[in-house]
Amino acid sequence: MPSPMSYAGPQTVNDEFTVSLLAIDDDPGSLDFIRDALTQEGVEILTASDPQRGLDLIARLHPQIVLLDLRMPQMNGMELLERIMEADPGTDVILMTAHQSIESAVEAIQKGAFDYLTKPLSLERLRGLVGKLVADARERHRALQLDRQLLDAYQFEGMVGRSPLMLEVFARIRRVAPHFRTALITGTTGTGKELVARALHRRSPVASGPFAVCNCSAVVETLFESELFGYVKGAFTGAAQDKIGLFEYAQGGTLFLDEIGEMPLAMQAKLLRVLESREIQRVGSPATRKVDVRIVAATNRNLGVMVAEKQFREDLYYRLSMVEISLPPLLDRKEDLPLLERYFVERFAAQYDKPIRGLTRRAQALLARYSWPGNVRELENVLGNACMMLQGNMIDVHDMPERLRNSLPKETAAATGEPLLSLEELNRRHAVQVLEKTEGNKARAAEILGISRATLYRLLEEK
Ligand SMILES: Nc1ncnc2c1ncn2[C@@H]1O[C@H](COP(=O)(O)OP(=O)(O)OP(=O)(O)O)[C@@H](O)[C@H]1O
Ligand SMILES: [Mg+2]
Image 1 (cartoon, rainbow, N blue to C red):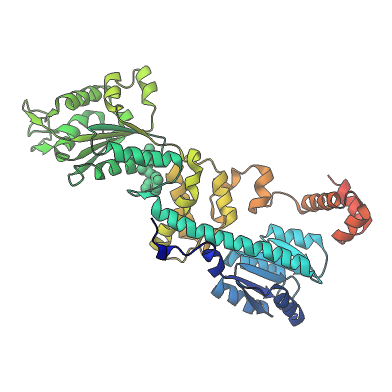
Image 2 (image 1 turned 60 degrees about the vertical axis):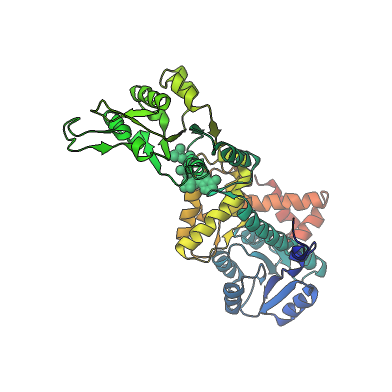
Protein backbone atom coordinates (compact mmCIF):
# COMPACT_ATOMS: atom_id res chain seq x y z
CA MET A 1 0.00 0.00 0.00
CA PRO A 2 1.70 3.27 -0.99
CA SER A 3 1.53 5.89 1.72
CA PRO A 4 -0.44 9.05 0.80
CA MET A 5 2.81 11.01 1.04
CA SER A 6 4.52 8.99 -1.63
CA TYR A 7 1.64 9.28 -4.03
CA ALA A 8 2.62 12.23 -6.13
CA GLY A 9 -0.22 12.05 -8.59
CA PRO A 10 -0.15 11.25 -12.26
CA GLN A 11 2.15 12.91 -14.79
CA THR A 12 4.73 14.24 -12.36
CA VAL A 13 7.53 12.27 -13.95
CA ASN A 14 6.48 13.71 -17.24
CA ASP A 15 6.31 17.27 -16.03
CA GLU A 16 9.58 17.36 -14.13
CA PHE A 17 11.72 15.98 -16.89
CA THR A 18 13.28 18.66 -19.06
CA VAL A 19 14.24 17.74 -22.59
CA SER A 20 17.19 19.68 -23.90
CA LEU A 21 17.60 20.69 -27.48
CA LEU A 22 20.70 22.13 -29.09
CA ALA A 23 20.61 24.08 -32.33
CA ILE A 24 23.89 24.50 -34.21
CA ASP A 25 23.90 27.02 -37.01
CA ASP A 26 26.26 29.78 -38.07
CA ASP A 27 23.31 32.00 -38.96
CA PRO A 28 22.08 33.85 -35.84
CA GLY A 29 18.77 34.63 -37.52
CA SER A 30 18.11 30.96 -37.91
CA LEU A 31 18.93 30.31 -34.24
CA ASP A 32 16.52 33.07 -33.19
CA PHE A 33 13.82 31.59 -35.36
CA ILE A 34 14.31 28.16 -33.76
CA ARG A 35 14.29 29.55 -30.25
CA ASP A 36 11.08 31.49 -30.89
CA ALA A 37 9.41 28.56 -32.57
CA LEU A 38 10.25 25.97 -29.96
CA THR A 39 10.24 27.75 -26.62
CA GLN A 40 7.85 25.87 -24.38
CA GLU A 41 7.70 24.50 -20.88
CA GLY A 42 9.84 21.48 -20.23
CA VAL A 43 12.18 22.11 -23.14
CA GLU A 44 15.54 23.73 -22.65
CA ILE A 45 16.94 25.32 -25.79
CA LEU A 46 20.68 25.69 -26.24
CA THR A 47 22.32 27.31 -29.22
CA ALA A 48 25.77 27.30 -30.73
CA SER A 49 26.87 29.37 -33.67
CA ASP A 50 30.01 27.41 -34.32
CA PRO A 51 30.47 23.66 -34.59
CA GLN A 52 33.22 23.29 -32.01
CA ARG A 53 31.14 24.97 -29.35
CA GLY A 54 28.30 22.69 -30.39
CA LEU A 55 30.45 19.62 -29.82
CA ASP A 56 31.56 20.92 -26.44
CA LEU A 57 27.95 21.44 -25.38
CA ILE A 58 27.04 17.94 -26.52
CA ALA A 59 29.91 16.40 -24.58
CA ARG A 60 28.96 18.35 -21.46
CA LEU A 61 25.19 18.39 -21.50
CA HIS A 62 24.10 15.48 -23.69
CA PRO A 63 21.08 17.15 -25.26
CA GLN A 64 18.50 14.65 -26.43
CA ILE A 65 17.85 16.55 -29.66
CA VAL A 66 20.25 18.37 -31.95
CA LEU A 67 19.25 20.59 -34.86
CA LEU A 68 22.21 20.80 -37.15
CA ASP A 69 22.90 23.08 -40.10
CA LEU A 70 24.43 21.12 -42.93
CA ARG A 71 26.52 23.99 -44.34
CA MET A 72 28.72 25.96 -42.04
CA PRO A 73 32.01 27.64 -42.88
CA GLN A 74 34.01 26.04 -40.04
CA MET A 75 33.00 22.43 -40.42
CA ASN A 76 30.85 20.46 -42.76
CA GLY A 77 27.61 19.41 -41.07
CA MET A 78 28.00 15.85 -42.29
CA GLU A 79 31.36 15.57 -40.57
CA LEU A 80 29.87 17.07 -37.43
CA LEU A 81 27.04 14.56 -37.60
CA GLU A 82 29.56 11.73 -37.69
CA ARG A 83 31.32 13.13 -34.64
CA ILE A 84 28.06 13.49 -32.74
CA MET A 85 27.06 9.93 -33.58
CA GLU A 86 30.42 8.72 -32.39
CA ALA A 87 30.35 10.66 -29.15
CA ASP A 88 26.69 10.17 -28.30
CA PRO A 89 24.81 7.84 -30.62
CA GLY A 90 21.66 8.19 -28.53
CA THR A 91 21.15 11.75 -29.78
CA ASP A 92 18.33 12.48 -32.19
CA VAL A 93 19.84 14.71 -34.84
CA ILE A 94 17.78 16.68 -37.33
CA LEU A 95 19.71 18.07 -40.25
CA MET A 96 18.78 21.43 -41.72
CA THR A 97 19.72 22.11 -45.27
CA ALA A 98 19.09 24.99 -47.57
CA HIS A 99 20.09 22.92 -50.53
CA GLN A 100 17.32 20.60 -51.37
CA SER A 101 19.32 17.59 -52.21
CA ILE A 102 17.96 14.25 -51.20
CA GLU A 103 21.40 12.71 -51.72
CA SER A 104 22.83 14.45 -48.69
CA ALA A 105 19.65 13.90 -46.69
CA VAL A 106 19.75 10.19 -47.44
CA GLU A 107 23.42 10.06 -46.57
CA ALA A 108 22.70 11.85 -43.29
CA ILE A 109 19.99 9.37 -42.37
CA GLN A 110 22.30 6.50 -43.12
CA LYS A 111 24.83 8.08 -40.83
CA GLY A 112 22.30 8.06 -38.04
CA ALA A 113 20.40 11.35 -38.37
CA PHE A 114 16.76 11.08 -37.42
CA ASP A 115 15.36 13.28 -40.19
CA TYR A 116 16.02 16.46 -42.11
CA LEU A 117 14.34 19.80 -42.63
CA THR A 118 14.74 22.07 -45.61
CA LYS A 119 15.49 25.75 -45.27
CA PRO A 120 13.85 28.16 -45.06
CA LEU A 121 12.40 26.31 -42.08
CA SER A 122 8.69 25.73 -42.03
CA LEU A 123 7.37 26.59 -38.58
CA GLU A 124 4.80 23.88 -38.77
CA ARG A 125 7.17 21.12 -39.80
CA LEU A 126 9.81 22.20 -37.30
CA ARG A 127 7.32 22.14 -34.45
CA GLY A 128 5.81 18.89 -35.63
CA LEU A 129 9.11 17.06 -35.86
CA VAL A 130 10.58 18.43 -32.63
CA GLY A 131 7.29 17.86 -30.80
CA LYS A 132 7.43 14.22 -31.76
CA LEU A 133 11.03 13.87 -30.58
CA VAL A 134 10.31 15.66 -27.30
CA ALA A 135 7.42 13.29 -26.61
CA ASP A 136 9.68 10.42 -27.52
CA ALA A 137 12.49 11.57 -25.20
CA ARG A 138 10.01 11.85 -22.33
CA GLU A 139 8.70 8.42 -23.09
CA ARG A 140 12.20 6.96 -23.04
CA HIS A 141 12.99 8.73 -19.80
CA ARG A 142 9.86 7.27 -18.24
CA ALA A 143 10.70 3.83 -19.57
CA LEU A 144 14.19 4.09 -18.11
CA GLN A 145 12.86 5.07 -14.70
CA LEU A 146 10.39 2.26 -14.89
CA ASP A 147 13.15 -0.19 -15.82
CA ARG A 148 15.10 0.93 -12.75
CA GLN A 149 12.14 0.36 -10.49
CA LEU A 150 11.38 -2.94 -12.16
CA LEU A 151 14.98 -4.01 -11.79
CA ASP A 152 14.71 -3.55 -8.04
CA ALA A 153 11.36 -5.26 -7.92
CA TYR A 154 12.16 -8.18 -10.16
CA GLN A 155 15.34 -9.57 -8.72
CA PHE A 156 15.25 -12.86 -6.99
CA GLU A 157 18.38 -14.35 -5.44
CA GLY A 158 20.68 -12.82 -8.05
CA MET A 159 18.33 -13.59 -10.92
CA VAL A 160 16.56 -10.97 -12.96
CA GLY A 161 13.23 -11.69 -14.60
CA ARG A 162 9.73 -10.38 -14.95
CA SER A 163 8.32 -12.59 -17.68
CA PRO A 164 5.48 -14.87 -16.59
CA LEU A 165 7.77 -17.84 -17.24
CA MET A 166 10.51 -16.56 -14.94
CA LEU A 167 8.08 -15.42 -12.25
CA GLU A 168 6.79 -18.97 -12.28
CA VAL A 169 10.35 -20.26 -11.87
CA PHE A 170 10.90 -17.94 -8.89
CA ALA A 171 7.60 -19.03 -7.33
CA ARG A 172 8.55 -22.67 -7.76
CA ILE A 173 11.92 -22.14 -6.11
CA ARG A 174 10.18 -20.51 -3.15
CA ARG A 175 7.73 -23.38 -2.84
CA VAL A 176 10.24 -26.18 -3.27
CA ALA A 177 13.25 -24.86 -1.35
CA PRO A 178 12.00 -25.50 2.19
CA HIS A 179 11.18 -29.16 1.57
CA PHE A 180 13.12 -30.84 -1.23
CA ARG A 181 15.64 -33.64 -0.80
CA THR A 182 16.50 -33.93 -4.48
CA ALA A 183 15.74 -31.57 -7.34
CA LEU A 184 16.49 -31.50 -11.04
CA ILE A 185 17.07 -28.31 -13.00
CA THR A 186 16.79 -28.48 -16.77
CA GLY A 187 17.26 -25.94 -19.55
CA THR A 188 19.58 -25.25 -22.45
CA THR A 189 22.99 -23.72 -22.04
CA GLY A 190 23.27 -20.33 -20.34
CA THR A 191 19.69 -20.18 -19.04
CA GLY A 192 20.76 -19.82 -15.41
CA LYS A 193 20.69 -23.35 -13.99
CA GLU A 194 23.56 -22.74 -11.64
CA LEU A 195 21.89 -19.61 -10.28
CA VAL A 196 18.75 -21.64 -9.59
CA ALA A 197 20.78 -24.30 -7.81
CA ARG A 198 22.30 -21.66 -5.55
CA ALA A 199 18.91 -20.05 -4.98
CA LEU A 200 17.44 -23.40 -3.91
CA HIS A 201 20.26 -23.76 -1.40
CA ARG A 202 20.01 -20.23 -0.08
CA ARG A 203 16.26 -20.53 0.38
CA SER A 204 16.51 -23.91 2.09
CA PRO A 205 16.68 -24.58 5.84
CA VAL A 206 20.33 -25.62 5.32
CA ALA A 207 21.34 -22.28 3.78
CA SER A 208 24.03 -21.82 6.40
CA GLY A 209 25.49 -25.25 5.58
CA PRO A 210 27.99 -25.95 2.79
CA PHE A 211 27.21 -25.79 -0.93
CA ALA A 212 29.44 -28.24 -2.81
CA VAL A 213 29.73 -28.40 -6.58
CA CYS A 214 30.61 -31.38 -8.73
CA ASN A 215 30.86 -30.73 -12.44
CA CYS A 216 30.20 -34.20 -13.79
CA SER A 217 31.57 -33.42 -17.24
CA ALA A 218 34.95 -32.53 -15.79
CA VAL A 219 35.50 -35.68 -13.73
CA VAL A 220 37.51 -38.57 -15.18
CA GLU A 221 35.38 -41.71 -15.16
CA THR A 222 37.76 -43.72 -12.97
CA LEU A 223 37.96 -40.97 -10.36
CA PHE A 224 34.24 -40.38 -9.96
CA GLU A 225 33.75 -42.57 -6.97
CA SER A 226 36.61 -41.16 -4.94
CA GLU A 227 35.56 -37.63 -5.91
CA LEU A 228 32.05 -38.12 -4.53
CA PHE A 229 32.66 -40.60 -1.70
CA GLY A 230 36.31 -40.04 -0.80
CA TYR A 231 38.86 -42.79 -0.14
CA VAL A 232 40.99 -44.25 2.59
CA LYS A 233 44.77 -44.42 2.72
CA GLY A 234 46.08 -47.25 0.55
CA ALA A 235 42.81 -47.65 -1.42
CA PHE A 236 44.84 -47.33 -4.60
CA THR A 237 48.35 -46.30 -5.63
CA GLY A 238 48.77 -42.66 -4.79
CA ALA A 239 46.20 -42.70 -1.95
CA ALA A 240 48.72 -41.57 0.63
CA GLN A 241 46.11 -40.56 3.19
CA ASP A 242 42.38 -40.55 3.85
CA LYS A 243 40.41 -38.00 1.86
CA ILE A 244 36.78 -37.05 2.20
CA GLY A 245 34.56 -36.83 -0.87
CA LEU A 246 32.02 -34.19 -1.84
CA PHE A 247 29.15 -35.96 -0.06
CA GLU A 248 30.92 -35.71 3.25
CA TYR A 249 32.09 -32.21 2.48
CA ALA A 250 28.47 -31.19 1.80
CA GLN A 251 27.24 -32.78 5.03
CA GLY A 252 24.37 -30.72 6.43
CA GLY A 253 24.15 -28.72 3.20
CA THR A 254 23.66 -29.12 -0.53
CA LEU A 255 25.57 -31.00 -3.20
CA PHE A 256 25.15 -29.60 -6.70
CA LEU A 257 25.69 -32.22 -9.40
CA ASP A 258 26.12 -30.11 -12.50
CA GLU A 259 25.85 -31.71 -15.97
CA ILE A 260 24.44 -34.88 -14.47
CA GLY A 261 23.77 -36.19 -18.00
CA GLU A 262 27.52 -36.73 -18.34
CA MET A 263 27.73 -39.10 -15.36
CA PRO A 264 28.78 -42.62 -16.42
CA LEU A 265 26.09 -45.33 -16.06
CA ALA A 266 28.02 -47.29 -13.44
CA MET A 267 28.31 -44.17 -11.31
CA GLN A 268 24.62 -43.43 -11.76
CA ALA A 269 23.82 -46.78 -10.13
CA LYS A 270 26.02 -45.96 -7.16
CA LEU A 271 24.52 -42.51 -6.81
CA LEU A 272 21.01 -43.93 -6.77
CA ARG A 273 21.97 -46.34 -4.00
CA VAL A 274 23.29 -43.45 -1.92
CA LEU A 275 20.14 -41.42 -2.50
CA GLU A 276 18.07 -44.34 -1.24
CA SER A 277 20.20 -45.44 1.70
CA ARG A 278 21.60 -42.02 2.64
CA GLU A 279 24.90 -43.74 3.32
CA ILE A 280 28.24 -43.72 1.57
CA GLN A 281 31.38 -45.82 1.67
CA ARG A 282 34.75 -44.24 1.10
CA VAL A 283 36.67 -46.08 -1.61
CA GLY A 284 38.72 -48.86 -0.03
CA SER A 285 36.70 -48.96 3.20
CA PRO A 286 33.86 -51.30 4.15
CA ALA A 287 32.55 -48.82 6.74
CA THR A 288 29.36 -46.96 5.88
CA ARG A 289 28.82 -43.35 6.88
CA LYS A 290 25.50 -41.55 7.19
CA VAL A 291 25.17 -38.49 5.00
CA ASP A 292 22.54 -35.80 5.30
CA VAL A 293 22.82 -33.91 2.05
CA ARG A 294 20.34 -32.30 -0.31
CA ILE A 295 20.98 -33.00 -3.96
CA VAL A 296 20.45 -30.53 -6.79
CA ALA A 297 21.23 -31.92 -10.22
CA ALA A 298 21.31 -29.92 -13.45
CA THR A 299 21.56 -30.77 -17.11
CA ASN A 300 21.16 -29.21 -20.51
CA ARG A 301 20.55 -32.64 -22.02
CA ASN A 302 17.13 -34.19 -22.51
CA LEU A 303 17.26 -36.94 -19.89
CA GLY A 304 13.99 -38.46 -21.11
CA VAL A 305 15.57 -39.09 -24.51
CA MET A 306 18.76 -40.36 -22.86
CA VAL A 307 16.67 -42.83 -20.86
CA ALA A 308 15.02 -44.07 -24.05
CA GLU A 309 18.47 -44.49 -25.58
CA LYS A 310 19.70 -46.30 -22.47
CA GLN A 311 22.32 -43.63 -21.74
CA PHE A 312 20.71 -42.63 -18.48
CA ARG A 313 19.20 -44.88 -15.80
CA GLU A 314 15.46 -44.68 -15.72
CA ASP A 315 15.21 -45.25 -11.96
CA LEU A 316 17.67 -42.43 -11.22
CA TYR A 317 15.83 -40.18 -13.64
CA TYR A 318 12.53 -40.72 -11.83
CA ARG A 319 14.13 -40.21 -8.49
CA LEU A 320 15.71 -36.90 -9.57
CA SER A 321 12.83 -35.52 -11.57
CA MET A 322 10.21 -35.76 -8.83
CA VAL A 323 10.99 -32.10 -8.30
CA GLU A 324 11.94 -30.51 -11.59
CA ILE A 325 12.50 -26.87 -12.39
CA SER A 326 12.89 -26.14 -16.05
CA LEU A 327 14.32 -22.91 -17.33
CA PRO A 328 12.89 -21.40 -20.51
CA PRO A 329 15.27 -20.22 -23.26
CA LEU A 330 15.72 -16.45 -23.46
CA LEU A 331 13.89 -16.45 -26.78
CA ASP A 332 10.70 -17.43 -24.93
CA ARG A 333 10.98 -14.60 -22.42
CA LYS A 334 11.95 -11.54 -24.41
CA GLU A 335 10.06 -9.40 -21.90
CA ASP A 336 13.11 -9.92 -19.68
CA LEU A 337 15.55 -8.44 -22.19
CA PRO A 338 15.29 -4.74 -21.22
CA LEU A 339 15.70 -5.59 -17.55
CA LEU A 340 18.61 -7.91 -18.18
CA GLU A 341 20.24 -5.27 -20.39
CA ARG A 342 19.95 -2.65 -17.69
CA TYR A 343 21.17 -5.10 -15.06
CA PHE A 344 24.27 -6.09 -17.01
CA VAL A 345 25.07 -2.57 -18.24
CA GLU A 346 24.95 -1.23 -14.68
CA ARG A 347 27.11 -4.08 -13.48
CA PHE A 348 29.73 -3.66 -16.21
CA ALA A 349 29.68 0.13 -16.02
CA ALA A 350 30.60 -0.19 -12.36
CA GLN A 351 33.16 -2.90 -13.06
CA TYR A 352 34.93 -0.90 -15.77
CA ASP A 353 34.27 2.38 -14.00
CA LYS A 354 32.72 4.04 -17.05
CA PRO A 355 29.75 6.42 -17.25
CA ILE A 356 27.70 4.16 -19.52
CA ARG A 357 24.11 5.27 -19.78
CA GLY A 358 22.60 2.39 -21.71
CA LEU A 359 21.81 1.17 -25.19
CA THR A 360 20.56 3.15 -28.13
CA ARG A 361 17.13 2.23 -29.42
CA ARG A 362 18.73 0.76 -32.51
CA ALA A 363 20.97 -1.46 -30.41
CA GLN A 364 18.02 -2.52 -28.26
CA ALA A 365 16.06 -3.38 -31.37
CA LEU A 366 18.97 -5.45 -32.61
CA LEU A 367 19.12 -7.43 -29.37
CA ALA A 368 15.37 -7.95 -29.42
CA ARG A 369 15.53 -9.46 -32.88
CA TYR A 370 18.36 -11.91 -32.16
CA SER A 371 17.61 -15.54 -31.32
CA TRP A 372 20.07 -15.91 -28.38
CA PRO A 373 21.19 -19.53 -28.78
CA GLY A 374 23.59 -18.97 -25.86
CA ASN A 375 20.78 -17.44 -23.77
CA VAL A 376 21.55 -15.16 -20.80
CA ARG A 377 25.24 -16.09 -20.79
CA GLU A 378 25.56 -14.92 -24.38
CA LEU A 379 23.76 -11.66 -23.57
CA GLU A 380 26.06 -11.15 -20.61
CA ASN A 381 29.12 -11.71 -22.81
CA VAL A 382 27.89 -9.43 -25.58
CA LEU A 383 27.19 -6.57 -23.17
CA GLY A 384 30.36 -7.21 -21.20
CA ASN A 385 32.47 -6.91 -24.32
CA ALA A 386 30.59 -3.85 -25.51
CA CYS A 387 31.08 -2.10 -22.15
CA MET A 388 34.74 -3.04 -22.02
CA MET A 389 35.46 -1.60 -25.48
CA LEU A 390 33.09 1.37 -25.31
CA GLN A 391 34.51 4.86 -25.63
CA GLY A 392 31.31 6.92 -25.59
CA ASN A 393 28.49 6.53 -23.12
CA MET A 394 25.85 4.71 -25.18
CA ILE A 395 26.13 1.22 -26.59
CA ASP A 396 25.25 1.27 -30.25
CA VAL A 397 24.79 -1.21 -33.07
CA HIS A 398 28.44 -1.15 -34.09
CA ASP A 399 29.45 -2.21 -30.57
CA MET A 400 27.68 -5.51 -31.14
CA PRO A 401 29.46 -8.58 -32.50
CA GLU A 402 29.10 -9.33 -36.18
CA ARG A 403 26.99 -12.43 -35.69
CA LEU A 404 24.26 -10.29 -34.18
CA ARG A 405 24.40 -7.67 -36.89
CA ASN A 406 24.46 -10.30 -39.59
CA SER A 407 21.50 -12.15 -38.15
CA LEU A 408 19.24 -9.32 -39.27
CA PRO A 409 16.69 -9.91 -41.95
CA LYS A 410 17.59 -7.67 -44.90
CA GLU A 411 14.54 -5.44 -44.95
CA THR A 412 15.10 -4.28 -41.38
CA ALA A 413 18.78 -3.63 -41.88
CA ALA A 414 18.37 0.03 -42.84
CA ALA A 415 16.34 0.75 -39.73
CA THR A 416 19.22 -0.34 -37.49
CA GLY A 417 21.82 1.70 -39.27
CA GLU A 418 23.21 -1.05 -41.44
CA PRO A 419 23.68 0.50 -44.89
CA LEU A 420 22.92 -2.49 -47.04
CA LEU A 421 21.17 -0.49 -49.75
CA SER A 422 23.07 1.57 -52.28
CA LEU A 423 22.41 5.29 -52.24
CA GLU A 424 20.86 5.01 -55.68
CA GLU A 425 18.45 2.43 -54.44
CA LEU A 426 17.56 4.50 -51.39
CA ASN A 427 17.01 7.52 -53.60
CA ARG A 428 14.79 5.52 -55.86
CA ARG A 429 12.69 4.22 -52.96
CA HIS A 430 12.40 7.69 -51.51
CA ALA A 431 11.27 9.01 -54.89
CA VAL A 432 8.66 6.26 -55.12
CA GLN A 433 7.37 7.16 -51.66
CA VAL A 434 7.09 10.82 -52.52
CA LEU A 435 5.35 9.90 -55.74
CA GLU A 436 2.83 7.84 -53.79
CA LYS A 437 2.19 10.80 -51.49
CA THR A 438 1.54 13.05 -54.45
CA GLU A 439 -0.78 10.42 -55.86
CA GLY A 440 1.36 9.94 -58.93
CA ASN A 441 1.77 13.61 -59.77
CA LYS A 442 5.31 13.55 -61.16
CA ALA A 443 5.67 17.30 -61.56
CA ARG A 444 4.74 17.82 -57.91
CA ALA A 445 7.00 14.95 -56.78
CA ALA A 446 9.96 16.36 -58.70
CA GLU A 447 9.34 19.75 -57.09
CA ILE A 448 9.25 18.29 -53.59
CA LEU A 449 12.38 16.27 -54.24
CA GLY A 450 14.12 19.32 -55.66
CA ILE A 451 15.08 17.55 -58.87
CA SER A 452 14.08 17.95 -62.49
CA ARG A 453 11.36 15.78 -63.95
CA ALA A 454 13.92 14.17 -66.23
CA THR A 455 16.01 13.16 -63.21
CA LEU A 456 12.91 11.78 -61.54
CA TYR A 457 12.10 9.67 -64.59
CA ARG A 458 15.64 8.38 -64.67
CA LEU A 459 15.50 7.52 -60.95
CA LEU A 460 12.26 5.65 -61.35
CA GLU A 461 13.52 3.67 -64.31
CA GLU A 462 16.68 2.49 -62.57
CA LYS A 463 16.44 -0.93 -61.09
N1 LIG B 1 17.99 -14.47 -14.81
C1 LIG B 1 19.26 -14.10 -14.76
N2 LIG B 1 19.59 -12.90 -14.24
C2 LIG B 1 20.87 -12.51 -14.19
N3 LIG B 1 21.90 -13.22 -14.63
C3 LIG B 1 21.65 -14.43 -15.15
C4 LIG B 1 20.32 -14.92 -15.25
N4 LIG B 1 20.37 -16.14 -15.83
C5 LIG B 1 21.66 -16.39 -16.08
N5 LIG B 1 22.45 -15.37 -15.68
C6 LIG B 1 23.91 -15.29 -15.84
O1 LIG B 1 24.22 -15.93 -17.06
C7 LIG B 1 25.36 -16.74 -16.94
C8 LIG B 1 25.00 -18.19 -17.23
O2 LIG B 1 24.19 -18.72 -16.20
P1 LIG B 1 24.42 -20.20 -15.62
O3 LIG B 1 25.87 -20.48 -15.50
O4 LIG B 1 23.59 -20.36 -14.40
O5 LIG B 1 23.82 -21.01 -16.85
P2 LIG B 1 23.64 -22.59 -17.02
O6 LIG B 1 22.20 -22.82 -17.29
O7 LIG B 1 24.25 -23.28 -15.86
O8 LIG B 1 24.46 -22.86 -18.37
P3 LIG B 1 25.25 -24.20 -18.83
O9 LIG B 1 24.22 -25.24 -19.17
O10 LIG B 1 25.99 -23.75 -20.05
O11 LIG B 1 26.13 -24.59 -17.69
C9 LIG B 1 25.88 -16.56 -15.54
O12 LIG B 1 26.90 -15.59 -15.53
C10 LIG B 1 24.68 -16.06 -14.77
O13 LIG B 1 25.06 -15.25 -13.72
MG1 LIG C 1 25.94 -24.49 -15.73
